[in-house]
Amino acid sequence: MPEDEILYHYTSIAGLNGILCSRSVWASDCRYLNDEKELVHALDLFLGRFDGSEREALSLALHWHNSSRAHCVLSLSRSPKVLSQWRAYGDDGRGAALGFYRRHLPGIAKELPRMLVDCVYDDHEGFVDGVIQRRNEDIAALVKMHEKERALNAFWELIDRNPQPLVRLYAELLRIKNPAFKEEQEVRLVISGNL
Image (tube, rainbow, N blue to C red; front, side, top):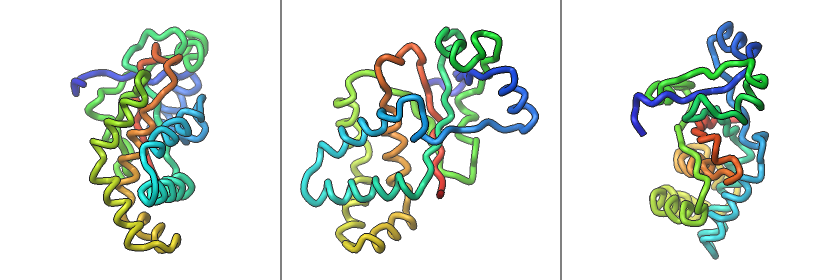
């Protein structure tokens, strides 16, 4: 996507006032998004591609990562003209759509791991296959950590010292979105931090 693309965050006038007064925007924990089943679906598709010790290692790693870290999402749209967004988040058309340049968004929350990702609405299975190819090194690193430390506490400590493979993997899986919401053209700023 072009770096000069503008992405829009829909909000009410009260929300806009809060953003301007605090000079900050809030991200939502991914477990409390409108469709919390999206992440469950993505994890099931992903883990379904593995078996044996690889599946065990990845399942344990993802479980720990999900329970020990918050994965927050700032939802944006590539369009300022999505009627459903105006109705749901823009106070039925009386709110605002704030524009952010794509190139500036990764600078938000600099102290925390973050990724800007475009949502995927179709061919989730093919997308997961692509994730496995793109994140092959991260997957191999997680499996290797599990082989090195079979005891859960020791394995989870290794993950805590090196969370980046899971941060990248989680952000990829959070791209999967229900096709019914395709008109939203959603882009997510995913921010991960310790609970």
